[in-house]
Length: 331
Image (cartoon, rainbow, N blue to C red; front, side, top):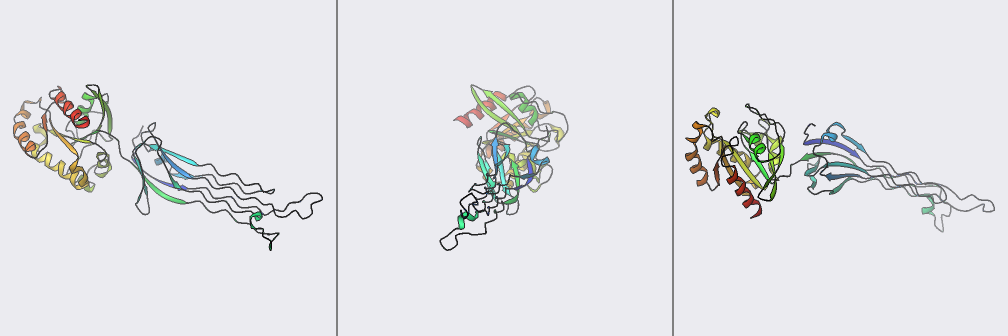
């Protein structure tokens, strides 16, 4: 299944049914008076969050939604049936944004949380509603009101306890596959991970969700590389776990790599600065990498971040990292 985390949809609520213009006609009752019923209300368009869906794929390929209109009123004071509501099911963690004003309508972060994004039109009144002592036989009624219509942007932000952040090919996918049951695509070239991966980690009778965010490069907060498309998934994480590549093949110094990543997150959202952050210097199984570790650890810890030297391949240092994550999440 394709992972789609943003879609634009057009919704139209149902129109209200027209009121009825009718008069009572029965044997021996030549002038029974007006008996036109009201029209039914149009259906609403509702967005509901569900953990049973994990992508906005349906909304990407079916972007138009129209709720049922209300039925027209009938004689004998019969009110038309209201139109059925249209429910759009989206993943938990979806933000609904008005496309015209860019205003957030709702942030659906709980199971079965709902929001009405377009209200159906009211039904028109029948002529029986207009009868007065001076107008005893009104020959007019009301049309139904049109339903609301608008364009909306749906943005999915993953709900995870720990988010892995790092440059492409830093070993994030290998790390999450080592500590969880997630099995992302792993290869030795940049941007192997093109979609976020979620893994459930169980450690010392505690469970938490870890997200492998696709690689971030310098300028990501301005849309460079995969940029803004995936930076949004970091916003909800309780702990940010930097994965820094120690291998000499990158051509980057680990201190520089950490500085670029932290600056990108701060530029994207200043709120992330106060988030709990841990740093992992990965690929310590390589002999050349160990020589770079002490200086990098001293630089990072001097800035106040807990730093661990580890290898997602051999498992070195993984237990210490998981212990620190558990302490951070559960105290």
